[in-house]
Amino acid sequence: MLLKRLATVSILIIGYVLMFKPSWILNRLSAHSPEVLYSIQTQEPILALTIDDGPDPLTTPLILDLLLDHDARATFFLLSDRIPGNEALVQRIVDEGHEIGNHLTDDQPSIRLSLDEFEQQLLSAQDVLSQFGEVHWFRPGSGWYNKSMRAILTQHGYRLALGSIHPFDSHVPSSWFASNYILWRAQPGAIIVLHDNGGRGHRTVDTLDKVIPALLARDFRFVTLTELSEQAQGVN
Image (cartoon, rainbow, N blue to C red; front, side):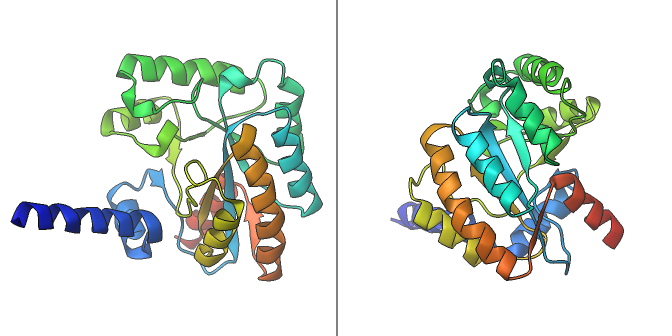
């Protein structure tokens, strides 16, 4: 009975952390692993918007159109296997003032790869992405990583970026939920995580169509991860 109660309490605690992501927990994580970016502490009304799993020839242009209409910047974590045939689209991302990050070659949990496979995919994706500009940010598939992966990233000049606002859009197929979750959780220095490609990409378009104007009306600005990181360095 005691074990069952402890298991229930543990599940509730994990659910609380995943759902609400209290700032004190994120601050502890950031202090414990300063090389991993979750968010920054600032009074400036800035947010970093990040988009995973592109490019997609149908949905990425719609996302870019919205960003252009609102003069907003984002960081796109791209899968290199999806770039062939979409080179002009990736070039558009860069030309319009956004930045690209390394999300490996295909959509799978990075933590399941052996270290050799992880490094091979990292460098393979880098070879493709570097044709469009410098790439300094990495995000693991499914968000899980370990110390050995971090060491490889550091060796190759990458910084690992996760986030502080993840509206579960990869699991909850609801733009209404994602939009309200982001608007509820938005605060200066936060990093928003959304997804591109297929149905997820269409939901992201709908979500951003609601969220961007609402947050701009609250005087927020959308910046790249690099701009957000530079703001943190300025504060320090």
